Figure (cartoon, helix red, strand yellow):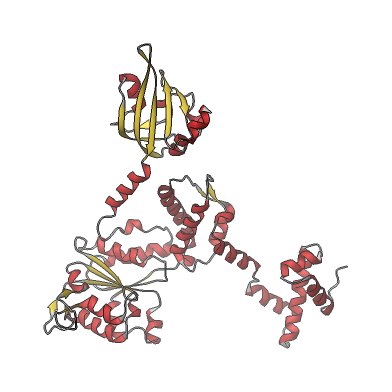
Length: 457
């Protein structure tokens, strides 16, 4: 009963004898410190845990000084170097006038401490620099180098990349490496608002311009001396693109309803998720705006073109969510690693991060992400890909059998026969199992075998 009660209470309980050896270590304390009981029990406290230079163990202090302490925050490290922060009540145990040990009742505040530190680190509009960009591939190194060169000037920049490739990360990095780093960085998604609102948001309004209008500066005026990021610039209608072009050329803005121009000193960085030439051809981007914005054009490669960066990105995301979820995941299984390298990642780095986060959400005490931990949609797409026959195999099949063009029906029958024979052979000619793999009923498979003259003997 005593042991069960200790393990059920929702506080950590750690007791040491007069020599500093652990004699009580409950389940909650094990969870807080990510330790196994055999690593701590009957061992000297200072042989297991490490403390910062300016701190000492509150338990050891209770033994040495015989003083009770309450609500003392302590930061220390477990035997794997993981940082832990607890709020402790520590009580020396006296008997017959001398200290026989000490007990500590602790509450875990590690997550709270990390959140507070995170809020301090993320103050300000921009969090990313070029050091935040992960990758050792030649493709990404070339793009980073081009972006670094662009940060030395105040020319407009157009960043092109598929969804999830990290366009805003590059935009913030350019801003933070430029002479405008101390100025504001303002980001606006041009697809997020209707045209009438986006115009007043960008250029501002003059009191009386329309019912309810007040004097209000637009994003260009708010970004004075800094950088304005216009995301999905190709979603702006062509009339607004023309007004934007005038601002970029003249470096002045005119609020809606106003009669005078206001000079602005703003560097514009624009993002788009399609090739600008395609956008111009489909009348989604003005050619003259492209020439003005694309003084420096940066094309971010999709993840499928830099797959050698996947292991490094994976480890970064595992470290990120280990810290956020208080977990100790070490890496991927060989099967997951291989599937990640084979997958095309149409959602790019954002999709990779979401897959890692989703997997770690359903893990318990495992240290390796296995295929069963991955989201159902991802596993389903991988299984579907495995079942698909590469087009090169089909082409090879055709070339091996004929040099002349035959009717489509005849060619399909030949391929169907070869494929069914292949599946039957792989399953030792077990018709029920083969039919299940082919997605057919047993009767349907037997009918096709008879029709195509396939013999199982």
